[in-house]
Length: 181
Image (cartoon, rainbow, N blue to C red):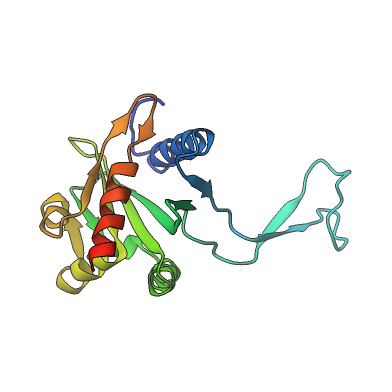
């Protein structure tokens, strides 16, 4: 996977999630996929439409896209937004308005919306936070760190061999808690 640097920050967490998605699907643990933004192919020759015979083309983004990953685990839909920071605190401003809106929509329909934060300052750690936990913290502060995540019982996620995020124990706990509510 390589050495963590600020330059390749987004790629480390995304690579871990891609490995996790592949492993979970192959072992029938969960259905987990990366989303891609909607786009339209544009011709480089100025004509309308996409010309597959041309070796270069342009694309135009149609929408901002969904949260980074979506899937089904134990019959329950979920979606995950990935964020990374080299700082000791995570700034809420890194979460875009359309991402919060999608999290709210998923939550209101009975699905699970998560934010997975990778802090890679002096000690690299991964934290999974539910949409409801995120709302609690957002009301109190403009940024959050590991102490605040612990305060709302966010979940520290471990990496297991071979580069897989160990999400299932946390998902099981969240599903059990939602059944008790």
